[in-house]
Length: 89
Image (cartoon, rainbow, N blue to C red):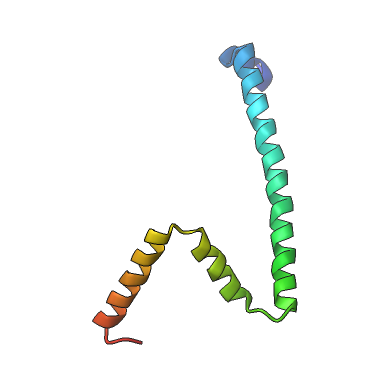
């Protein structure tokens, strides 16, 4: 019975093998970068908390600032409509 390496060589030509390896290496580098950025964000949020700011609110502001203005306004209008429909908070 053939081992896995010889089976994969039969299935993927040299060009495809090289492309696959290149893609996997790029993914690995990006995963490493993502871990670094994630750690940096965690540190900034800890600093934010240390400065006395409410991190939950800061996260919400960051999320809102990322949204398109029209989309944000539409969401706010729907929230107001739904709140009105149930008699408010």
